[in-house]
Length: 253
Ligand code: 5RP
Image (cartoon, rainbow, N blue to C red; front, top):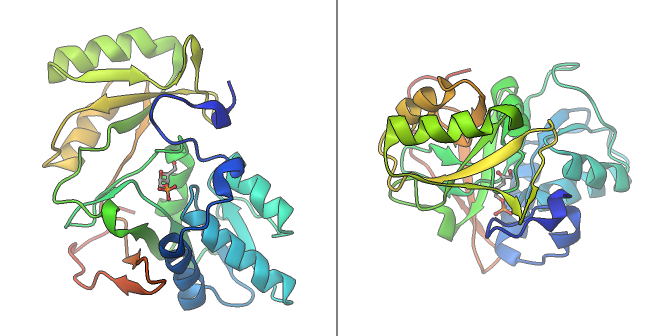
């Protein structure tokens, strides 16, 4: 099935839903580009309805004559970049001073849940490779702890039954839903599947991420920690605020 047909309660983040006109999301996306993207830069551009506005802003800057190039984090974002005539680059082909992406949840320590659009693997690759990782969200994404949003886990399809069994064996009663529509699985840009796992409150994202990645067949999880350099929160008024407390002392990249 196409990523645009996801009907499991996870929002599909394909370009067709990007006729969104949420002033808070737009403000966050625009602010990130205006603050950090300079003429001549190569930027990482995320996936989703908030990152959409960052891509759109970069497109406008290119239309105005700037020479910005981009590394998109999904085929959907790549399609939008192409539509906006944004030149594309590959990972680490050039220095990447900044990457801008959305998130499904942001905890007080700036750990994130990502992958609502199924692009978590490439999103994490770009987050790890860039020099500054800027997260653009709206107020409802700020949570006391991760876990209300089911955790996206990218898995190799062949190993799906094993991964499901091991999650049950190692973590107990966790509701695990294969993303997709009926018998049709959602297929990621890497040819894999997504499990959405309901762990409940996640107090130690690094420990859970490490434990999950020990299961053969797990490619990546949507837990991002020690990565965000700035969190820009868009508000309904069209203004933004940045979370000011930098909670971490070292990056994992
Ligand atoms: C896609 C993502 C998105 O960044 C996340 O789902 C947030 O999307 P939106 O800004 O549309 O709420 O991780 O895989």
